[in-house]
Length: 335
Image 1 (cartoon, helix red, strand yellow):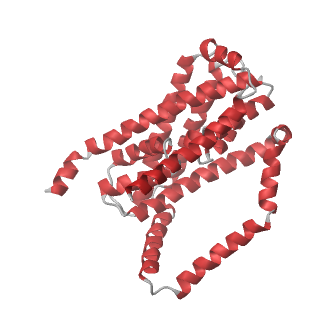
Image 2 (image 1 turned 90 degrees about the horizontal axis):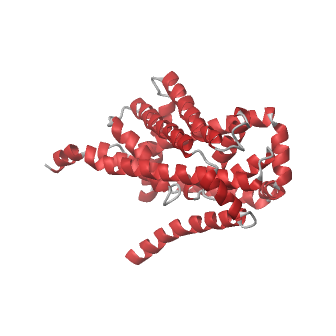
Image 3 (image 1 turned 180 degrees about the horizontal axis):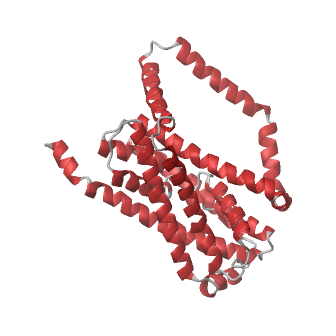
């Protein structure tokens, strides 16, 4: 069992990482690496990039505070520093195991604050749905007011459009979805006496309680303002780096918003730190605005590397802080 568990974990780490690295190799294979290296060594204001990192940290601290509002609404008591440290650690875990950080975040808060995991998972779903809505609204805004960009983007990357079309034109996608829904309905309707089904129902009930937290919010305006604050900080986390390079400094805030949105879509791909998809989206976007491809590649390489290291370091601090700030609680529980 240990061998199987270790093998399974290694595969979860290696498969997405290999995919991301292969995509990264595919993106950079035909570029002038000497020219890119010259930009990395002499064409970057690293002091400006370091300044941008503060906005990323503030965004994740606000995210921890916003998660706390959802926990307050379902009547759960928690330590605020635990929620913030769990969010910071979430991103560090994701750098190793994509999307596992979200599960880890709920697990660690359940451990230290004795909140049912399933309730936490429900609030996490709301947290992620809110992010998806924000990215969707920004993308829609860009699509309406910068349609020419998307036209240019897909003209230069036709394989992406073909991939979307083939996916949604395939009847098997809809067959699988309908079959899955019918199986779930049958199990819960006609097999409700089984212990496993009853446990699943109880788990889903707790998840639903967590999801309902959005309707039970006492401070809806604060939740909205914190959501705006998170994404404003994320934007400046990305956009400030434009001023670190001569070839992006004068592109303007609207181009920055477009590039930021495309990078956010790239991060949605379940690969460690968005490695590969993030680079592709940023490079392809900057090229649409007449940035030299080698320069765009250097921008993506520097910004992603520095920000990924920063995310990992902040996450490690959060992971280490959790047991240290909960020592008294653990001692009390053991006694």
